[in-house]
View 1 (cartoon, rainbow, N blue to C red):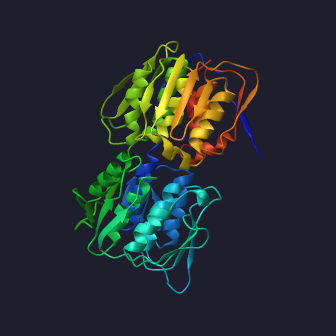
View 2 (tube, rainbow, N blue to C red; view 1 turned 30 degrees about the vertical axis):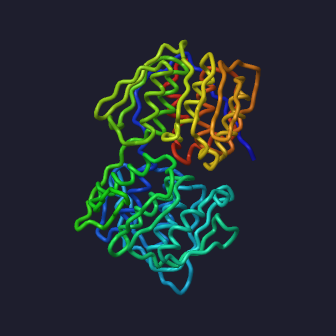
View 3 (spheres, one colour; view 1 turned 60 degrees about the vertical axis):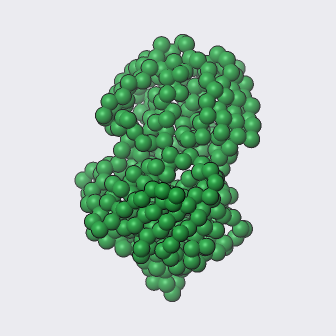
Length: 423
C-alpha cells in the first residue's frame, strides 16, 4: 500500500544541523571491524536500514556487535559451522550484498546470500567472476549474474582482476575482504571503474584501521600488524548535498555540522556544482555552510560520474532553475535502488518541469510550474524521495509517495528538513 506526504513550500531555510554519519564509511567500518578479533569501537555509526541489514548478516556470520556509549563495539572472527548453510538476507542494501559476497568468499562456512526482489535484479556477475577465478567456491542459486548466491569460501592470496565498470563496490568488496585472506590480495580493475572515488574511500578506511595498502598497477592490501581499536565515522556528504540544495531551492542559510572539509567523500565533489548553480559554500574542518538568495538558480551541464548519489538532488534543483541542465556520464544510475535516470525524469515531469532520459544522460529544463495536486512517485528509493522534497520547497501541492523509504540512509530526513524551513 502506498502512503503519501504533502510537504508544504518554504519561504526560506534557516538553521543549523548535525548531518547523519556516512553510510558508506559505516558499512566499510563494520566489515573491517568484524574481520578483527580484537574489539573495535565504531564511534557515531549511521543507524539506517542499510547499515542494520549489514549488521544482521555479520552477526549471523559470527561477529559480536554491541551498543556502547555513542557507538558500537565490534569484533570477530567470522566463521560458521560448514555442515549447514547460513542464510544471509541483505534486504535492499546493494552495499551489503556486494561486500558480503567477497567477505563470505574469504570466510569459513557455507552461506546463501539473498535480498529483496529489487536487490536480486541488480547485477553482481562481474564480482562473482573475479572471486571464482581466485579460488572462491561460489555459484548462482537462481539466474546467472544475480542474487541469490551459494558461497563456500576458498579465496586464495594472489592477483585478482575484477570488472568494476558497473559498480565500484565490486572492487571495494574485494579490497575489504583482502584483510581476511592469509597473505592478502593484489587487485586490478579491468576497464573503467564506476564512481572511482569510492575506491579511494575504501583505501582510506583500510589505512585508518591500520592495514597495509600499496597503490600501483594493482592495489595490494594485507592485514596490518596492529589494527586500530577505534574508528570515528565522518559525516555523510550524500545526505548533506540534499540539505545544501534546499538552500538553493528556498533561499536562506544553513550550517551543517559534522562534515570534514576538505573531504575524500565522493559526494563532496558535488559542492562545486552547487556553487555554479548559485549557492555560496564555505567549509571548515568540521562544518560546511551555505547561503543563497533563492531566486537566481543557474542551469548547469556537468559530468556527474564520480558523485552519483548527488545527482537526484542536483537534478531537482536544476528543475527549479530557468533553462536547460544536463547531467552526463551517469549510466550506472540505472542499476541503483531504482532506475534513477528514468525515475528522475518521471518525477521532474510530474512536478511540472521538462526532462528527458538518455542511456547515460539526463536533460532537465526548468523552471517547474505548479499544475495542481500531483503525485510524485519515488519507486521506494530514498534518493528519489529526497529529490521530491526539494521540489516541494518551491512547487505547491506535490504528494510524495512512500516517503518512509528515506529510512534506507537518513531516517530523520523529513523531520530535519521541516525543522529548518520557514513558512
